[in-house]
Amino acid sequence: MHRKFENVYVGWGHKYSVDNMNPQLPPMPQEEFVSGPEITEAEDPSPQDEAALKKAQEQAEEAGEEAEEGAEEEDGDGDED
Image 1 (cartoon, rainbow, N blue to C red):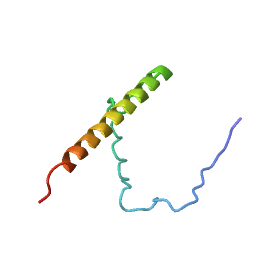
Image 2: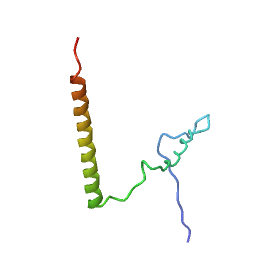
Image 3: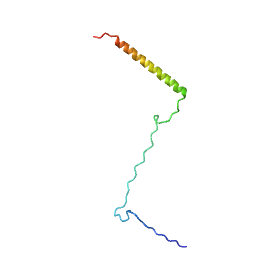
Image 4: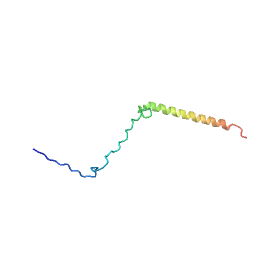
């Protein structure tokens, strides 16, 4: 049993080009991103930890406000010339 086949080219290729086809090389692949603490996933805090942090932040804020009020009172007591 003999099989026959033919190849047919249809297109705008470089069949009769004088110069050889030399396509540009693709760019080098990017190196992997360096892993650091700013992108490393961390465990979510527990609700108790979140409540403790919120309480500490509120206390620090209150202490800061009291310090500002004390500084304003000291500045206001001086003699003005």
